[in-house]
Length: 64
Image (tube, rainbow, N blue to C red; front, side):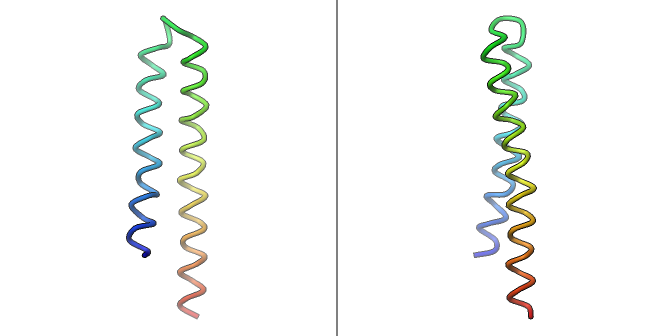
């Protein structure tokens, strides 16, 4: 189960990179869409760190 959680963690980073690239590509053509994609990218990075911290807490409880 822990390996599956790690895959989802890195999935959030992949999503953040994709949204970051889309932000750069849409910056000059559609600024509102670019801001929205930038927000999603920031949320995805936040979710990566949140899930990583949550998973490490769960693993530490199992070890004790």
